[in-house]
Structures are given as C-alpha cells and as structure tokens.
Length: 285
Length: 264
Image (tube, rainbow over all chains, first blue to last red; front, side, top):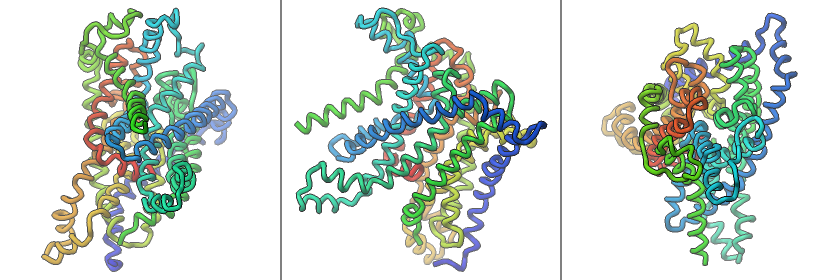
C-alpha cells in the first residue's frame, strides 16, 4: 500500500540491523577466529577439545540432561495447560502461580533448590524430625553425583516447565471453539476431543515449544554450576571454566563454537518450521 | 466430584510452584544459629540480618545497583533502536521484510554464551572491557530482537485507521505516531520493557565474563555464593527472586501474549 515510501522502512530498520551485526554477527566470526587460532596449526584447539574426556562428558551430560528434562516438562506442561485452559473460577490465579518461576534466573532456582536439598536443608530436617532417616542424606559432592544429577533434573523441571506451559497455553487459546461445538454435535467423548481435535491442532505449538526448549537445553549453565560445580560438566559450564579459571579463551571458544553450531542447527529447524505460520499472522498491511 | 478434583489440582499445583519460593524466603530470614540445629525445621524468630549483611557488607548493594543500571541502559538502547524497526515491520510493505523477520527470530535464538568470549576481545580494543556499559551493550543485543518482534506485534494491534484519521486532520506521519499510536501502544510497551528488564536482570553468563569489578547481582552471586555460608546463599536467592516476582505480577495480564510472541 505504501510501496512508494520503501525507503523509509529501510531507514527505520537500519540501526537495529547495524547493531545486531556489530554485537552478534561480528562476535560470531570472532568465535571462529578464536577457536581456530593456535600457533601449532589451525585445528589444534579443536583436536585438543574433541579428543578430550572432558568434552565427551560435557557433551553427553548436556544431551542426557536435556533428554530427561524435556519429556518430563512436556508431559507436565500439557496437563497444566489443559487444566488452566478450562477457564474455571480462579484459573487466573493459577496461571500467575505457574508463571512465577518464569521470572527466576537459573542462579536463583539453584539457590532455592539448595535451601531444600542442602545437608541441613528443609528436606533433611523434615525427614529427621519425622524419624524417617537417622542421619542427613547428602545430595551434593563428587561422591553423590547421581543425586546431584537428580536435584538438577528436579530444579530444571520446576523452573522451566512454565516456559513450555505458556507456549502450549497460547496455542490452546488460539484453537477455534467451533471445532468443539461440532464435536459435541457428533457426540465426541472428552477423550476423543482431546486426541482428535486438541492435540492435533496443538501440534505447531508443541513443535515450537520443543525446539525452544532444545535450544535452551544446550545453554544450561547456572543451575549445574552452582549445584554441582564441575562434578557434572556441561558445555556452557566448560566454556566458563576454561575462560575464567584456565584463562584460555581459545579452548573456551571451541566449547562456545560447539554450542553455536548446535544452536544453528536447531535454530534453523525452528525458523523454518514456524516460518509459514509466523509470517502469515504477522503481516498486516 | 468434578469440582473437588479441580480444588485438589489447584492446591497441588500451587504448592508445587510456591513452596520452594516460600522456603528460600523463610531460609533467608532464619537466624544463623537455627540453621545447624537439625531438629529445628522452623525458625525460632525471623531476622533480616543476612539480607542486610549481604547487601551492605558483602557488596550486594553495589551489585544490585549495577544490575539495575545495566538493565536500564540495555532497555534504553534496545527500545530506541527497536521501536522504529518494530513500527516499520508492522506498518510498511517492503522487499526483504520476511527475511528481516526471520533474521530477528534467528538472532533471538543465539545465546550470549556463544558471543561473550569474542566480545571481550572486541571490548579490549574499545576500552569497554570490565565496564558496566559493556555488559549493558551485550544485554541490549540479547533483548533487541525480542523488542523488535514484540513492538511490531503491538503496533499491528493499533488500528492503522486511527493514524490515517490523524493524518487527515493535519498531523504528519511522525506526529500521528507520536500522538496516536504511541499512547495507545504504551501499556504493551511498558510490559515489554519490564519483560526486557527481567531478561537482563537474570542473565548471568555474559555478565560474569564481561565484567569483573563491576559485577551484576547474578554474576556477583555466581562468583561468591558457593564459598559463602548457607544463609547468605538463601539471602542472595531472596534478593534475586523478590524483584522478579513483583515485576511478573505487574505484567501478569500480558504473560501469555508476551511469552507467546517471544518464544513461539
């Protein structure tokens, strides 16, 4: 409609694009430079990292954590979203309560869960009081890595389920009520409505929530770092460790590069799957 | 029967999400002597000692101020740059628009973890290393794609006819934006600013790497918490959680639409 003025919108967007090129585009080139920069040959850093046991552990831990946490979050989030979407009295309050952890950082969530699982935390004190155990259960420390792992999973489920929940709820709310009215006419049972209407129509939301969650899974850092230190290594934690404690920005960059590549792959899927849907509803002219 | 089930679900879900928050709050107010008495689950009295000490003696207050400054600068930069871009995406048709939108979505998914290390090298050249501004600039880069997408959707929600009516009555295009669209979009813009604040307030990785002497609160906690006595950890958790809770309460009406747009 205002095709003649096509100069104006370009001008309006230019500052944003320039800023992103300087602060995101340029550093991404920088990460390649740093990762390949080694006097003994450009692949030396990569080799050193990829062949190390630390890398293998960090990679496996990151993936396994995601593979355990994400399905649990989805199961919980679907149930919660269906529950809130019923719009019964007080659903607004519940919506806010479920959304609360969304505002918390991973650091905060880790500290919260430490107050419960610490040797003299609430869980141990309560169990001792009830005489269910005789001495405190230790959840932290290299000796108890599997328990640390359990606490991290629980913390992540608690903290990030609301994220999936909100995306799914937004999807549920956009489903046209007329489908359900039609289903009533045909005498569908609630179960049939769920499996034949709600879930299929929710598929795009489920897919984008899944991709977003996967992206975040590669970035897991604060919770693990605070609760387990390097007992359980993850990719982002190793980046931090090599940069801050070993003072080696090249090795840190290799780890960051691995995260970047994983992000690009998932991000590309993400952008291309939601592309049609997103552009459709976004364009108004 | 059905009602009873809802009540049970309501109580169960509320407890699951609120209990940990209440516990850390309680722990931060528990006198230090009570912590190590194992059969004392509930504190004998409440005290603000740990929170006070963490803020005043252990550098928490300084870090808190840095956090707020970083967030405000990041919001200022990202809104000054992002609002025009969002407006352009909402109102104009031009070549390359879809590519730009997808680019915003894509940059939105690149974590600061990836760009933090090379940013240090870049900052060293421009004397930005270890400064508050440096952290703020990085946070602005993290928030900007989100601001563009969300403001574009907010402006789309304001009828273009209002603007056109204003222009018929003699306003310039910019005047129409300033006097008509902007006031109508204001509540949404405030909500997105608060959302951006929370994003910056919570970001820990880049903040820890880009600055050492001027640490933000989460970075300060990350580097000191695990070496501190337990009660300071809980005090730190409370100081981090309370502002975020208040802010999310203010924008509760926008929760679904906001996260819907920023994450979908």
